[in-house]
Image (cartoon, rainbow, N blue to C red; front, side):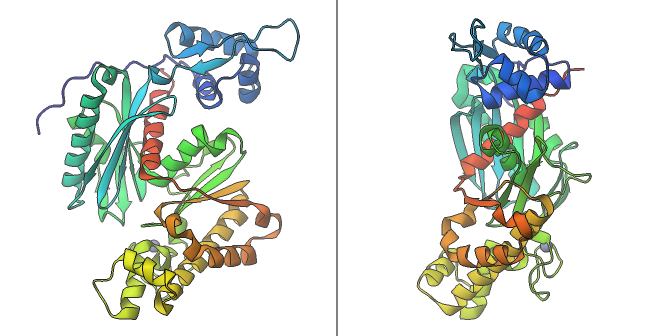
Length: 392
Ligand SMILES: [Zn+2]
């Protein structure tokens, strides 16, 4: 592969401590926000906030707004906001059949995007297409490309973010693929690899539910079933990085075979592939597509309705387990499967209500129709987070 056009080294704020990074992050997520409010959100003194914010304003990452009314008379308030285009990142969502890539700003704007269809999804092909996407976005950004701080790549499965290795992605059929290092060799920017659902949860943490909610879970339904969990101010990663793999909870009938090689997993009956296969079997039609299965279910076809019912029951059980374990304020149901949510909804709610324990049943279930652009933005947030790590 030819070399990427040289990029000016990415400019990032100098944040020397975790508290400085926390202050800057709160300005990103809550701006325009007063220094007093940043202090309240972080538990830090206004003096510490002022000391951190000064260099960020001087270096063009944070801006002070017009004087706003203060609740305490005589104290002027100049709310702080991030300068949206002071930092850009590329976010890439890898699907089995497609790569979706965005160039996003730290102000949560999508500046430009691109897609590549994948005829195959072996690591070599995927890396080549990721690099093509990066080059295309860099070209589209023009001079703005010198604001890029990094690239986030989100992939389903068991990801070691620290090393950028995809340890196991059943959907892609990958094991121990050093994706981060391989992409980084081709592009002149830092690369971070993140589990796709966790990246989506991080995007919600910064720019969605996390701004108001104390805790939430993002449950995705579609090609896989996953869950990102936000509690105590952060998205949970876990000791081994596999928190939230609810698609592989053994809550489905024990004879159902999963792509992970086990039996009885939620995904074994609830992934879009499992639903399609069940309808194929019911109609003895190996060429039947997921779109056919959806159309049949809408028309009341028994095999198709049963397949979605089984999926909804397994997903509802997984939601109840999530609520009972984590007790989040809100559960967002997302993923491409929610486009046909009406086909699952009754069984999901039935099973959830039957098994959510006590007050956990009062957690709100909200359906959100994220696009793959939103998923790619989650990958960009992962890249921004990496860029905001304190400089030691
Ligand atoms: Zn499984």
